[in-house]
Length: 193
Figure 1: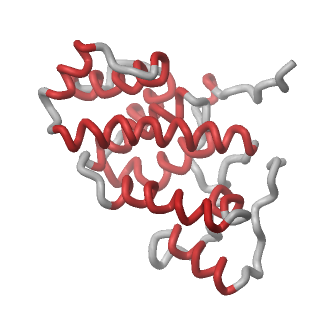
Figure 2: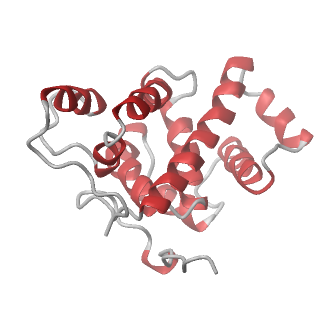
Figure 3: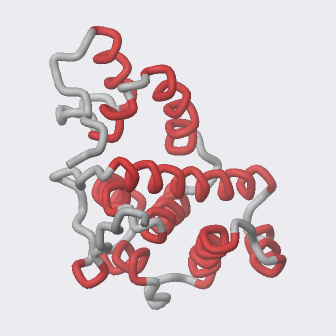
């Protein structure tokens, strides 16, 4: 059960318009729970939408690289909800195989190219250390320009933040989202002592 209940229809005209902006055009399903919870504070939601939508729709990284970063950041945060949404909504579209999608959770290096392994290593380093080793930075900088490097760091941090938000809200996965690999299903963490 979510700690903050998502808004339910009927929405006010302002909230309905705002929620439609979060969803792709023509989508018939209800807006995501996350979006409906965020709209408990419409001003905060509108500020968050700008960065989130910008990273997804106007990014400088390829769609494939973007989704690898997002999936790994969500997996490291044990955020089944956002991982499953992205795996279902974007995985096929950017060319991720089922084996690769699962490997974003398991950490299996087998299905990745050397460049993709470096990208995953960089997400891991940011998650663990909140920085990148010089070797990893140099490896990425040999592949990406300065704008892409900035975007990569922001993207990894943004989805760690989103994972933290969703986990703290205790949102259950969307019914249509990709299922988390069963053997690696995160346990709901106990309340802090």
